[in-house]
Length: 281
Ligand SMILES: [Zn+2]
Image 1: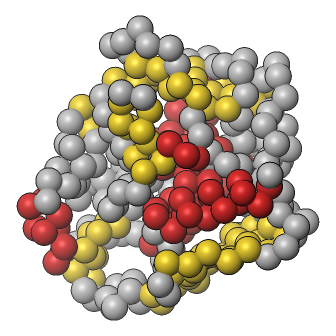
Image 2 (image 1 turned 60 degrees about the horizontal axis):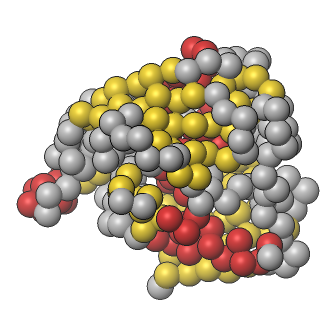
């Protein structure tokens, strides 16, 4: 699709509003999101069933949660925002208003593709105000939680390198590197679906999580095999990990850096996002 921007330099919003409905991965409840054009830089959330003023999203609203990224927005919590935010920022959008009904963003097919298709359906257009400045990085940055590590090295452009290592034959060790542009995001990253493990499903259900998880919205790994093939890419899991990282960087922006992530998690991504902000100030 040639109408995507060539890079992440410009300011872009939606041409028209577009609505998507679905169910949340963890609470299993119906929810909906309307994506609207916006004149104000950044991403802003308001509630379809409330008159409260819109909240502008920032990285400090992110709360550590086990399997998804949750934002604390005044009296509201909004969960599993990462695939939607990845789609917005990955497609090059910089000015978007989201009207939300529910406490969790619909999971759709477990990837960012449904959101990319929604954006493509209405098209994008230049926004009327400048976009927020991305974080700057003068020297290499290293963030870790135990053996899980993210490094960022100053570079000409934003690129990502992902490495995962799971003790399951179906996944094993995977490596994926990409110079990110809206086009490469849409083609190579957005379709990669979330994944889970059959031996953890019962435990997660008991913990009140993944109530909306199903074989049509998550790849399920059973040791050496997948319960619901085919995969969209041979290395779909590592691509999905980069999708999650992109979503978790959405509220900070993309640094001019090569970012390498080994065994990433939402908690690690959020530490990294905050460290980037600190380096920039
Ligand atoms: Zn994910």
